[in-house]
Amino acid sequence: MDYNFHWQPVFRRLPELLLAALDTLQVAVLAIILGIILGLLLAVLKMNATGKLKPLNWFARSWIELARNTPVLLQLFFFGFGLGALGLHLSPFMIVLAALTFNCAGYLAENFRGGLQSIPETQLRAARSLGMSAPKAYYYILFPQVLRNVWHPLTNQIVWAVLMSSLGMLVGYQELAGSAQYFASRTYRIFEYFAVVAVIYYILVKLILALSRLVAWRIFRGQGGV
Amino acid sequence: MIEIKNLHKQFGNLEVLKGIDLTVNRGEVLSIIGASGSGKSTLLYCINGLESIQAGDITIDDIRVHDPKTDLNKLRQKLGMVFQQWNSFPHLTALENVALAPRIVKGKSKTEATEKAIEQLRHVGLESKINSYPSALSGGQQQRLAIARALAMEPEVMLFDEATSALDPELVGEVLDTMRMLASEGMTMICVTHEMSFARDVSDRVAYFHQGIMEEIGPPEQLFNNPQSAHTRNFLSKVR
Image (cartoon, rainbow over all chains, first blue to last red; front, side, top):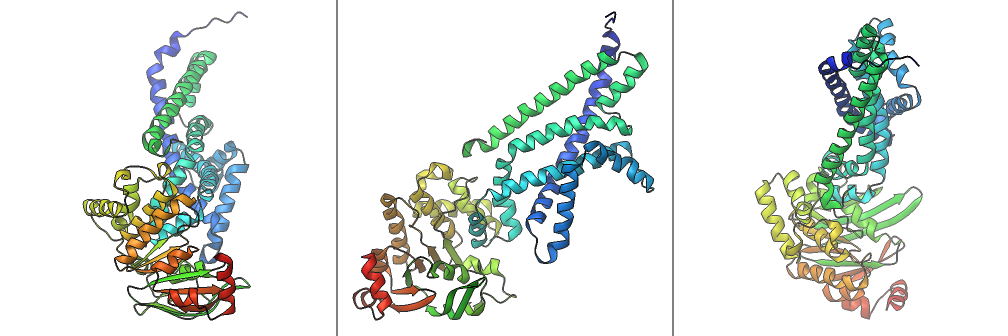
């Protein structure tokens, strides 16, 4: 064991690493926002197998199956090299965003479906009996209750998206892990860079968890918390 | 104002309403009694279009409920409904429970909806619970909240689906009192109920349902004291 730690080069690059961490956050947060919207849509489509919605129901089921049962890495490669082979070249940022969104929407759809099904059917009836259209009933009555039911899985998914975005370096996206890889390859301080980056990821996740708790306390305290 | 003609309703192969003819007049209080599974609650759901029908016709002020061209969201504003499982919205305070629909369905301003909601909550005796969430209310209070929520839409008819059946016995009275108050104010009401004393004291007419058929209808004195049908007699002898 004659390895000498050299932390100095890493600390010199700390500002760049922190900026890269912002890139990580940016792609993860965007993916989660899109994932929530698409996931809700997929959940509703998966639960409605009748009439005009039937082809969409099939589409939603396939999406959810693929997103949940194949490796994220392959999903990322599909949006990168797969689409590239078909002549559609996305930027590294777009590849990561598309893959994370695809994955998050699939997982969240199942969370939302569970959250929706745990709400008594009579809630929808009560809302409709007051003259609310179906979209209004979902928006004002069902979704807020789903949000409470899925708060913890949703938080997990946000954390998961942040951590998964590190795969982005494999398609050339210079987020936190990608930047570390780049700097490490120039200085050969591989262990030091990734150790520091691991700490940054850890802090990011802890911040997200704290924020999640704070927001939950703020909006659910009257209803007895989550 | 409500006219039901030869109404047939099926769930799959099970026919739960087998040709109902019934007219309810403005200001009338009609109680519907009968054993579980006799189709009473289903009738209410058909009246406000929460259930489809297979044959026959229901009109409310000459609007056909089950005509595909009818705007049900608009029609339902005339029909307040109170459920057996009170169905208060757990994520909203009592005030928000009542003020939401007038705001998002009728387009009232927040101030107006709030004022109106406070008035309705006071009406049913919940003025001290305005900012409570349903989880902090008793069953009886939640049911009165449901009544206030329906009233805030200024309905012309109130439909009560066994409004007291899921309540603890000591809480039944406060809900029945609220319903009595509404009746005395001249509200048109259709009450599916197992509370015979309520049906007897408050209703203008009582209908007895038996296996999807309206076996008998008439003023409470007649139906309770001098029932014409053997089924009615049999039912009443058991519930007394």
